[in-house]
Length: 119
Image 1: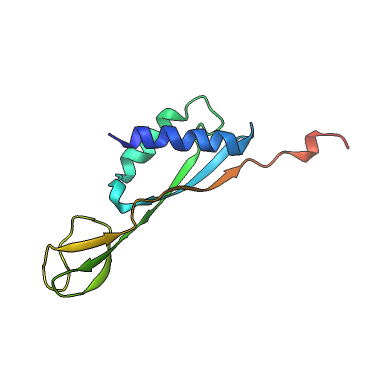
Image 2: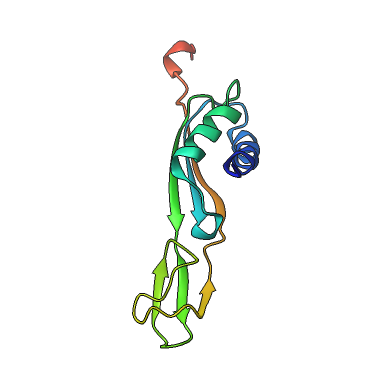
């Protein structure tokens, strides 16, 4: 389950950006070539974030498709499976681009309750 390793790296970045503030939501952009399973990613993030500023944070996973060009017929398309056959001719001689991204796109932090601070 490689999702665990990916989540450990993402959590490090989340903690740096949160600077001690509680994180309520995280959005991650991940390329289809990583072959991430959504439910495994959610479970892995919940596991690695226990006891951290992101404990209990929701995770939004945005899968970036691979750009595929069929070298047999020239058809171009996007696919969420990098090992797919050409959707036009069924050819297997494909050139792929992209789909290898792993980006911490956004974090949402808990708003500080200003009413608790005299001022």
